[in-house]
Amino acid sequence: MASQNTQLHFQDSLPLMANKLGGDGLIDEFCNGFNLLMDSSKGVITFESLKRNSSLFGLQDLSDEDLKNMIVEGDFDGDGALSQLEFCVLMFRLSPELMDGSKLWLEQMFQQEIKDFF
Image (cartoon, rainbow, N blue to C red; front, side, top):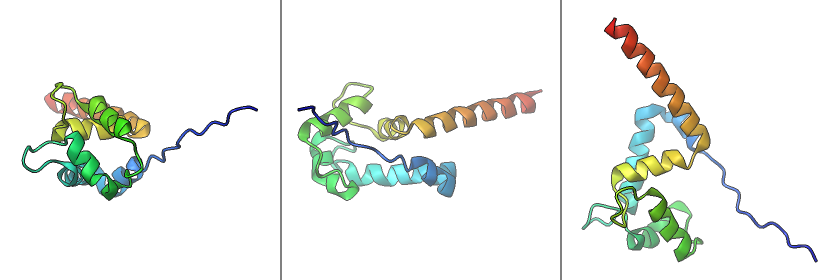
């Protein structure tokens, strides 16, 4: 009997949000999401705060291992938690289309800066 592929499919809605909200609006939404998930006494997202608040984002069915991996994936400074900046970077990294768009926006910004400089 052949095994079936039970891979979870992720629908990337961040590009739609970016188009609707604009760059500043999307960052505001990331900040709102961070505030909902963070441990208010520590000012960062910990495994415990992520687990406690995961249902707010439809993540309640994720295993403890999956939640821990989310923290590890975004934790650049190795403190075992996500700062607001780490959370925002992780959200961009989870969206390949948004990452491609942000590269384009960055290139356009640099081109404008060069024009303004000269």
